[in-house]
Length: 347
Image (cartoon, rainbow, N blue to C red; front, side):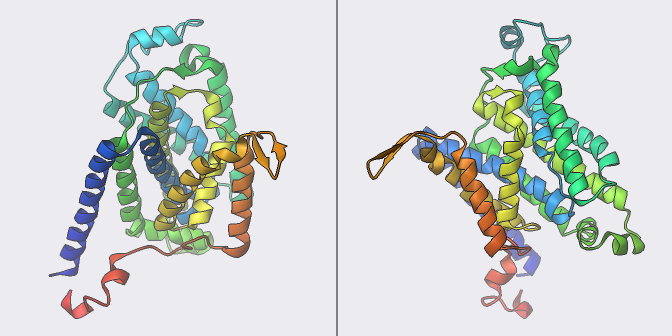
């Protein structure tokens, strides 16, 4: 059997196993476990999309929460029923035609991703002329500007009240399906000539430009693709938690994504997937550290935000002892797994 055909069958087998797992999970697992699995998939989408910008292209962006907010609001305003919109916008009415529009969830997802990608491209045009810390500051400022605008745009976003009581469309099929799509798109992109150009920009922009790589085009397109999947992730998250408000998409959310990318390894899709799962599970386990507890007879009151302190310590540990993250720039592949069983002349 040829190597390409073998790999295709193995990839299909993995997808079939995931489908079987989702069927079993929906029937056997309780709602809490399903919630964690959904969050794992959503954070995989967000982590891989951020790694495309920060890891593979080498651009230090802190604006992912802004793109997520855009995707969440756009999607919610499109799939909410007119009656639900009227209940939410009881202070200032929602502008027309958003007040009467209601479309299926799948189309709202696509539009949310496209709007986020469009904003990402517009932001990337001026911002990507900067590098390093300067780019990080500008993209962080963009994220905060989006949050402030959404806080004050009463007749569109409902201001600080946000959108409540959203219908739950996000489930394991949607979250894992889009997670698989994200991984496949980014993986094929990175393995293409376009991806090799991105890596060359990461290693040395001057050398890449001298070899004919269009820096503006490649960096802007990577930024837009990352923003597209961030918009999808934000839309899924909004429907999953049944609420969308500006404070949901604060810098703490971007910080969590940065931790996922750095712990997994800048430039590693495999590392990002592993890290997203580990950190999402830890986020749930570490809820106990924010609750009141007794330690050796000493009462310790609950401290909100204690989880983020633990994550900061985790990030420092990785930076100090695993400078390249869990996987570095390595990727899991069928080659390494099958090499000893299928010599090259037999595949």
